[in-house]
Image: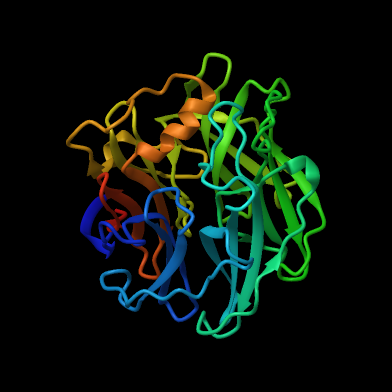
Length: 374
């Protein structure tokens, strides 16, 4: 596997509401064009954050000027943290967004370091029937109370049967100091995302010790689902290696999570038609880099000889560079990292495109890398 090209999708503008660019992802549309979204804001966690869109007609080599079709659905005080796009067929796109209530606890950060709780969050969806030129109004997804403020970490998946699956992770409310029993649930829709009825728990440690955060998921050629989790042991207060699980029966039956021997936080997987998988990941605590590897089948190991480096931190971050510490402190510390969140997927020509963010305390940019899979 080789990195054959790279560039910048969006430049941060220091001292402006577009200073910090994070949460990049993209979808391939029916006509082969790319539809990318990313979050911008004054800081990495700011009330003025919003999501921009850029398009590419040449496989990600060049990008259009930014658009802002995803305003917050509420009155003043809410922000749009991230938006994922799913192609449902033809020119029908489904957008799913994570919204942050900035009014209930004004001036507070997303994570409460003392309780491990988060600000009020909600999930909103809208549709486009013309490849994203126009959009419907937002509709808020009802989320069961036991989920708490929901985390959104993956695009909605269009399953082989035509059902949709949305992955949501539970959180504690901002001042909830009780023990956190972290869980990932899938919610299913049979009407293109208008309603979400069935529900399935995908991963949970019943003891509440191990957390399977930020699950990135994809669909294998044989129809199975595969997830990659940012894994944390809350008892020893240490990040573990990425863990992989497989779901059969369209996500109703799951294997036990397995350690894949790669540290820290995974990207969305790029799954090729022949079953090979390209996975990027950010390693903040050892090599302080973003890399990618390939496996020859969904179950196979990710081969060290296929590894490519996409980013390397040349200077130490402003804060701690440890994978150990109090859970709340580690969550709050995410705001200091100036690189991360890779997102990978397969391009129409068979290459793989990986997006990530990088920068410094003043500004961050979204970058792209094109990988040739040999």
